[in-house]
Amino acid sequence: MGDASPDNANALAAIRTHLANERTFAAWVRTGLSVDAAGIGVAKAHPGETTRWLALAFIILGSLMIVFGGARFGKVAADLKDAGSPPVYITRHMVYGMVGLLAILVVCTYLVVT
Image (cartoon, rainbow, N blue to C red; front, top):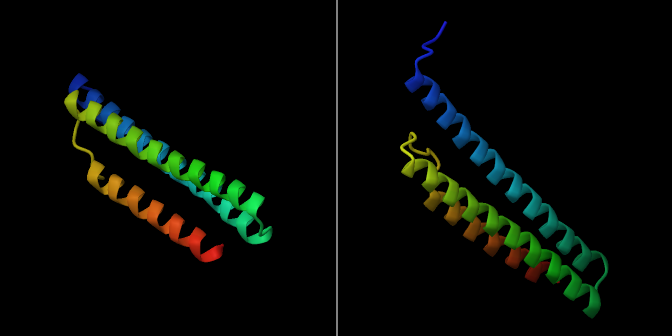
């Protein structure tokens, strides 16, 4: 049925941990983008100085969530690599690049909408 050796079990556990790390990162990005979208929606639906600050607060919070998720992903991936687990297929540099691009896109969207 499968090799139940300790080495194989450890490798499978490391793979499951990597996949859990990727799912957690995806959840942070999804939640951050939802908060960003709420901020952009507030800015568009209720133009005004007060709501502009509220929208900006939503966008900053959502963007920080994405950045935190990316930093957390990178830290866990580095810890797993240091522990001798198999390499991560999505590199930390790719994650940081995606986080930076998302931040730029959110700011540009906010500037276009308001």
